Length: 437
Image (cartoon, rainbow, N blue to C red):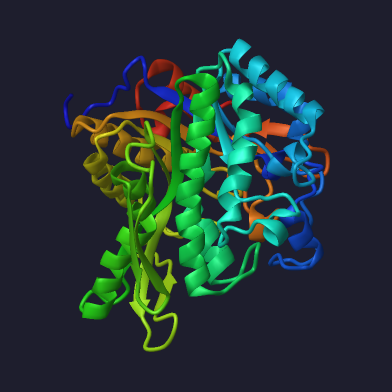
């Protein structure tokens, strides 16, 4: 493959991504409790009905097909399936099975996440991640979910962005469970690796084989002061702990994390070695790290170093970091799936350029020999963005949050052009309908 390749192979997958709490609506879980406690950036916002994907899933499958997608990433909502500890809602399992079967029947490969940040309301009280009981709780959940995947050829993700959950929920206390405790962070990290292994065992017992991995948020890092040795050291430590430690544990069986001033762990996890079939990565931006001489010893910021302008959520536009991290993933010798990549673009005009520059990096990585199998854009729809609430707009489709009408943005036509022709062309080469938003 040429280093300047502009064509994706016929078996490359273009798809879209969502997550249950952010789109389904009507879910009672730990995030719903967090909102009622006024802990979002806007304490008056609520997810509530979200964008009603629970009832509009057929419509949304159609929207995915309309942009040329052949895969659709969803998550299962643990709080729907097991609203009380030990009580499984069979009707919800049947509903999820029907949705996945319909997805498959319409030509969309299911990409299914077991855990995408949220928990049943009982979880943090009875089996929090920093206690060993969490592993068996997750095992039991995976066991009841396993039959959902029969005959689907699904790509399964055990855990979405475990390091984001741990840093936000266990170190900074900004998201559920709202803990700020270094040793508990390390204990929770170990148990999440064990939970992945437990889920794998349950899925294999039912299915015989499974394509299983995690989706890891991966940041490009840079020293805030290029000349400062401590800033440069933080970049090395941050990249290893944040981007790679979890993946390395699932490949080597050894979890090694060192976060000075916070905690460290060195443990061999039984069953973790070779416990994934692919590497899942989510990429959005780059962070500049600065050493500060007091706990937690690290500060970070997003900087517009090239005059490109920050995204509407305030993140640096840095596709070069996407290419850098894709290159780093070659160390694992496994297929790679881009399970999330997207931009908060509230007027919808910058997203085609974002797609172009980031898909260039995918092609370049493939040209270097990396086995990148697919690219899932985050997200099909504008949705509820966690602490940010209803402000950001990542969707290929603009959603009117009052009427829930879905309308295509200019990126829809551009995404479809690439997904259906397999050729990466500049956005200006794709004509836009005059009525597009």
